[in-house]
Length: 155
Image (tube, rainbow, N blue to C red; front, top):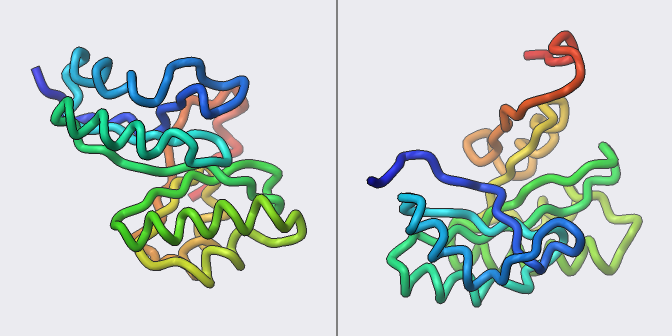
């Protein structure tokens, strides 16, 4: 039975200390669980992207490629998703920029190479900054369980 829910934060062993499964094994698990799509979102890299993409095609699962990149302003990570081939190329450039220059703000890198990218953030206060670079229609605020008080959530 297919589900309309799409997991957008799958991690493989490419995410050091956060994932253990090979990226190429994820699509078979997605199919077994009834998913029709899934997003590989390893932390700070795209090491498993091609392996995941090819395995998704073999399993007839829609592959979504992304990564979580550091956001020094928040001291957190922001998820970036490639919406197209051009977006994948830009995602590769952003990951490289962030990895090579510790002083580079994520929004600066995204602004330079933003075509075909979308962002996921758990931080509503950072969504406006991302929207200036990507456009409002390509920034999504995630709703996630939070152990802190619900009073910290703002519109």
